[in-house]
Each structure stands twice: as structure tokens, then as C-alpha cells.
Image 1 (cartoon, helix red, strand yellow):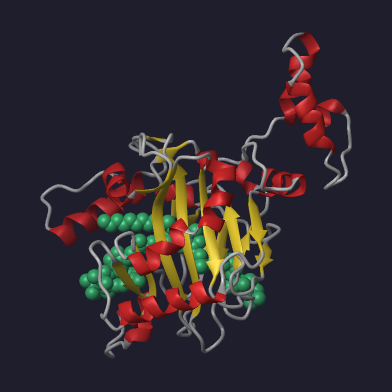
Image 2 (cartoon, rainbow, N blue to C red; image 1 turned 60 degrees about the horizontal axis):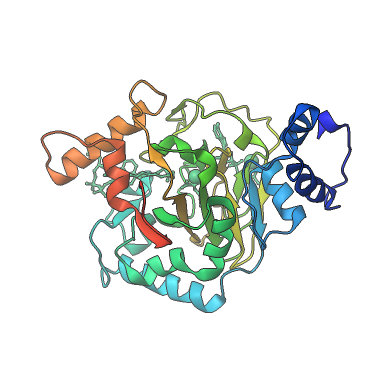
Length: 334
Ligand SMILES: CCCCCCCCCCCCCC(=O)SCCNC(=O)CCNC(=O)[C@H](O)C(C)(C)COP(=O)(O)OP(=O)(O)OC[C@H]1O[C@@H](n2cnc3c(N)ncnc32)[C@H](O)[C@@H]1OP(=O)(O)O
Ligand SMILES: Nc1ncnc2c1ncn2[C@@H]1O[C@H](COP(=O)(O)OP(=O)(O)OP(=O)(O)O)[C@@H](O)[C@H]1O
Ligand SMILES: O=C(O)CCC(=O)C(=O)O
Ligand SMILES: [Fe+2]
Ligand SMILES: [Mg+2]
């Protein structure tokens, strides 16, 4: 907009009208250069997002939609999660993770020690979340019609055991993903109850999705850090953080380069959220060797080697290719 010298008030709808107008003009001379800065990069043409919502995502890298998932659906996911904890439900590939402090302590942990479950793509009771039509309608605005569910999680942030290990360091999810382009990847994250600063809010730094993928490492936290909870190396604690206070069923969609994390759970309850990372099936895999993502590839490869008794590890691409499931349209490259 700077190039056009127009100061568009938020939500006025002028930008979108202008964009439609300009893209209809034959590309020549000054018009072509003028039309460029108005094009959308992070969202696709759609008839769901309001102009205001579309601009909000373009500028900030996230969008909260209130009350998108029903109480009934959430109660069903909660009950399926509890069955997994009690080992009444199982599925191939499912990863059940305990908090580092609890996992490394002497006492025998009960069901409640579970901090998250991942990779529930083979568990219909939970995977249903990833194909909820009201979620996919939004996902399509970012990715287009061919949608893969890449990564699934139900996070059960435990009451902090006094070591602040319930925090999730500030990170960019793209660090874990060997596929591109980043703008055709989005996370849907749904609060399964009210989530605010008392039980460990999702914290975002608006606009950081426009930056680069940064180097991630384990943060130097005295009380320990959970396995694979890498954080950005040079995180400035004075960055303008926004705490996303959400009610049960509210859903945030966010870009994989957006810097985010979550706070400590200071309550006695287990704070629950369910999420899925989606990618367009038009995305393509990249080789992360020689990039900042090499450290996570090594770690995942090593884990797979141990867990499945493989002689050699796996690549990051192998790890994701096997998890990916098509939830809409066609499975192409992914
Ligand atoms: C093939 C895998 C691919 C995964 C791809 C995921 C990509 C993620 C993308 C995400 C994008 C989003 C961003 C994100 O979400 S980032 C966070 C993502 N985290 C993970 O993906 C980790 C998933 N968890 C696991 O794989 C297992 O639960 C682990 C391996 C952790 C334990 O396994 P298991 O339950 O079978 O345990 P065990 O009894 O055999 O113990 C083995 C050793 O592990 C120690 N230990 C236990 N718990 C923890 C802990 N919490 N922190 C540190 N260490 C822990 C334990 O003390 C023992 O060590 P030692 O006593 O021998 O020294
Ligand atoms: N030293 C650090 N390095 C990296 N990330 C950090 C660090 N300290 C805190 N964070 C991250 O900042 C975010 C907010 O953490 P914090 O524990 O301050 O919670 P909070 O929700 O802000 O709670 P409070 O209301 O007490 O401020 C979390 O993502 C947390 O993991
Ligand atoms: O704490 C949460 O619910 C979100 C954690 C997160 O960002 C992640 O697992 O990638
Ligand atoms: Fe994340
Ligand atoms: Mg704080």
C-alpha cells in the first residue's frame, strides 16, 4: 500500500476492491508495478473470509474464529483422549508423551501425566477433528482445494510441576517441516476449554510470518525441556507478544513461520487443545541437509532408529510422508 500512497483504514474493503480492479487492468508499464504490492500472498480468493479477516491474516499471520467447533464434538474428543490414556483406545503410529519432569521422576506416573498425544491419523475418534467441514472451509482459504492433514496433536498441558517445563518455547512450526511453500501450510488449533494466562495461553508475535525460518535449538532452561521442544535461538523476550485468550471451541488458524509458544500452566487442571497442521497437496518436499533444520532431522531420525529398531535412520521427508493423509481433494505430491 505504501507504493500507492493510500492509507486504507482497516476493514474498509477498499483494498480488495482496488485489487480486483487493478488485476483486471492489462499488465503494462506503471500499472503492473502498481498492482504488485496489493496482491495477497498468504490467502487465496475465497468467499468465506471477510475483507477484514483476509487482511488481518496477511498482516498478522493468524486468525481466530470464535466458536467454530461444537461442545458436543469437543466432549467426544476429550472422551477419546481419556480412553487413550486408559489404554482403552489404541492406534498404529500414535505417540503418547509425558512431561519431562514426570517422565524422569521416580514415582509411577498415572494417566494424568500425559502431556500430549501425537499422530492420531489412524484413530477415527480423534482424526475426525481434521476433517470437520467447518475447519476445512477455512483451511481452503489458505491452501486451496487439495488438502493434506500432516500433523495431529492433542495437547494436555499439565499443571506445572514447579520447574516451568509446562511452557512451550517460542518457535516456528516450519522448523519441523521439510515441505514448502510455507504459505500453503496452516495450523488449526482449537481450545477444548477456556484458555487464558492462568493455564498457559498460546502466545504469538504478530507479523513474524513475514520473516525467515530461524535457527532453533533447545532453550537453556534450568528445569529441563521436553523432547524436541526446540525454541528460536535469538528470541528477544521484549518482542510484542499477544496472548490469545480463547473459549472452548474457538479456533486459531496460523502460518507455520509465525513465532509462537505457550505459557506455564499455573492451575491444577490439564489444559487441553487439539490441532492439525495442513498442507496443500501441491506442496513439495525439500532436502533439509545443510539447512537450519538438519538438527531436528537428526533427532527424529535417531528416535525412529531406536523406536523401530532400524539400522539406519529416516529422513524428515520419510517421517512426514507416512503420516500425511488426504482430507479433501486429491493427493498430489505430498
Ligand atoms: C519417528 C518420530 C517422528 C516424530 C515427528 C514429530 C515431529 C513433531 C513436529 C511438531 C511440530 C510442533 C512442535 C512440537 O510439538 S515440538 C514437540 C514434539 N515432540 C515430539 O514430537 C516428541 C514426541 N515424543 C516422543 O517421541 C516420546 O514421547 C519420547 C521419545 C519423548 C519418549 O518416549 P517414550 O514415552 O517411549 O519414553 P521411554 O520411557 O522409552 O523413555 C525414553 C527416554 O526418553 C525420556 N523422556 C520421556 N519423556 C520425555 C520428555 N517429555 N522429554 C524429554 N525426555 C523424555 C525418558 O526419560 C528416557 O530417557 P532416559 O531416562 O533413557 O535418559
Ligand atoms: N527464556 C525464554 N526463552 C524462550 N521462550 C520463553 C522464555 N521464557 C518464556 N518463554 C516463552 O514465552 C511465552 C510466555 O511464557 P510465560 O511463562 O511468561 O507465560 P505467560 O503466558 O506470559 O504467563 P504470565 O501471565 O505469567 O506472563 C511462552 O511461549 C514461553 O515458553
Ligand atoms: O501449547 C500448545 O498448545 C501449542 C504448542 C505448540 O505450539 C506446538 O506443539 O507446536
Ligand atoms: Fe507450535
Ligand atoms: Mg510471562
